[in-house]
Image 1: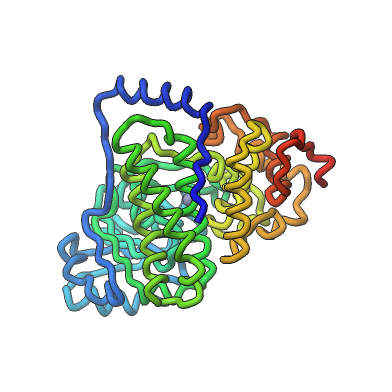
Image 2: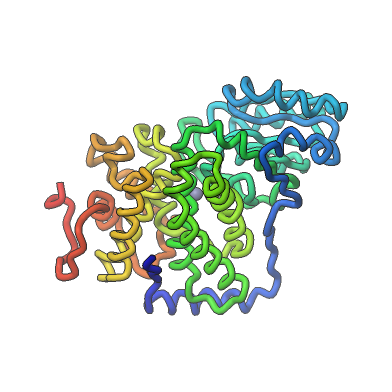
Length: 399
Ligand SMILES: [Zn+2]
């Protein structure tokens, strides 16, 4: 397998600036990992005692459908431990409005521990609720679509599902329950999306922190490379045999190892353009049918395309071709059309690009300036063939 390093010389000045800043601030606060992880075929069924050590009155936070299907199963685990639980829906989204009503529900139930069950948004909501109420938090992912069960970070969205901002939490979860038989009930598409989200760790961390001299950052970036290589090697086999050995390893990669990178790298090891593109796309209503990791996977291609177009970076061009091949093997989206956005208007595309290029956007961690016109050009040319002599494309000619 070809291993490519997409970072380049011009990253080094940015990294030097970053490392000087790091050197100046001597206090580092890291939340590396959950306090305990229970992982296995029947992790949930065997989690009663571990949950009971954290509290007696759990508030179970999830989406309406998840709560309807898993509350009986959770009750069967909690009741023998004499725990009094209550369910609380986070619908319609991980938003400020939902959090206000969840805080009221936690107070009413006199909750002393929060259990989040579901996908990334359910877990983000539960973690932020626990953070606001200063309560212990248990995360139970029902799919392998993100590493939200691990991280000390929550994303906040509007009631309409548009990304608004992220919140740094004061700890990783107290308990993470990774139950393979539970994850296996999720649609295969969620694991594919999780692979896309996890892949982004390398393409983003190597750009934002690839030249850092700091030991823990080097470790985090190298873990991101290891994560990418595991996914390249095992994803196709994993998807062919859900529940099999390779499948479990890939689930560990997307839910656990992906979390290690943010934990070890901390705020220095941030997202770059792939997630910025995702964040911009969430403002287009038609994009809501695509999963987080699907939009991020497409965003990796856009990021590489920017490096090609603006810097003439040939390594980025080869990395993009390598990813396109991998994406077609496992079914990750390569174009706006694949994301169900084949018919968006130019105005919508511009809006997404302008949001992704906003002042506080992580896209500006790229070692060059990006303006919305360039981003739009990259967004519509993710599958174009490599052509080193080609001058930067313009949008009109690509349509
Ligand atoms: Zn992500």
